[in-house]
Length: 378
Image (cartoon, rainbow, N blue to C red; front, side):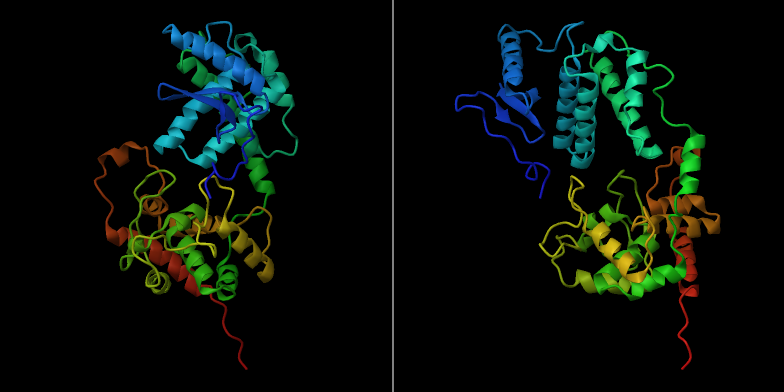
């Protein structure tokens, strides 16, 4: 199910209403092949007035963008979301990220006011906005909110909708590194011990066993599993770019991983996804609202007594990074994980040998096998 199909669109307020409800949450009009965002679903009359302004400007050959001093918060966030929607259509932005932007923009309009003129905003407004953050939000969520909000206004300046950059003041910055470290120290470790992983593995169906091994063996996350295709299973190597970043990545497969993947690959056509839900859907939806890996792993943890708040399937990436890092070959570890490397060394590096990749993956396998619980003597 796509993001577009998962949202119920409102009906037109009357039959002759010239706009249609776009799946991204706004009233839209297509004019000469281009879509125009006219305003949110909850105010169709304001959207109609906005369309009349746009149409009048277009009919005389003018740019419908608002002039300096007339740009309000509503128009800015709608233009921002329009731009991001084009990125989604081009495949440059995930629907899940777009949905996150849309939620933050709705919150921004609620607390700043849709009609507030953008150029009238200053440090005092953002200090007040910061005080409206929910105290229950974690450091990471607060940092994301601030980053996205500042990004909206930066986009407006870069798109020439604003004559000058917005000034936020010193109080509207991301949480300090110290605060991030303190919060992280207060939370459970995102690491499963080898015996814990064995408990999860031995109490799983074969499909979930394959997932666990891919997380441990290759540092695969939930979406990585969802994107994996039958045709990707080729012998002892898994050579698939990371979907999240497009970075090259490669892993040597444990014999145990290879056996399970070969089993599942034999059951499906080569051009299909390797794993699907019971309804025949990808494990993780594009908008992030369906995650069969997370829900299945949560149930598995509960049944095995391995419950720790905030520690899910993705923690297996932490395990691989931590254990493989003991080989002291961080370059090879990063390659398996699909991490970006912006160092000067990466510019000059022309490749990473299979031997290095196999060494870091083998180190994780050795650690895993050494932690296998021994059967009690009868």
